Image (cartoon, rainbow, N blue to C red; front, top):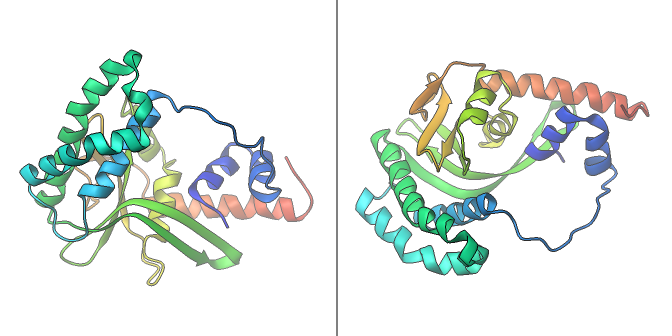
Length: 243
């Protein structure tokens, strides 16, 4: 079964994909503390999971209240290293940025008439040629016409990388989530990145999600190219060739 991560491994290096995804080799797990950006991302994801409940989106004041109510509890549970003295500045900034960012996201969803379907949703789908794909969607929303949209939540210092992915047709993770969002109907969902640090909802021009529009290849086109690439490298692997 493939995932957005395994597809990215394949694009970077077929040998890495075979070693990690096919042969299941790894260097093993060891204890390590994530860096501050990863901790902030983990914290923001879990707070979003708590406050963005299925159904119509609450107004800004309620979202802010909910974020403040769970911030310290979740901080201690999943991101306690942020409480170290040397990260005091990062934590102080996060106490301002995370609530403001999630309030902004709620405002954008309300303005676009989008309801929350769910957060941290597991999805799996089967495609032609024996391709099975699974993934976990950060946030799935739906408009009044029942069209679905996938929002991938990112904590990043700069928007440049995600914008470039969309512009250049390399948003493989977003294309994967779009393709598996509705496995029952097989209809691809719209997709966008929500950049927490920048409070930007970035998607392709014409998307039902995008607040900041980007001109680029459609997610459907990116997905089609991705599975053709997968099939080519898979065939080499089946023939006993590792590059």
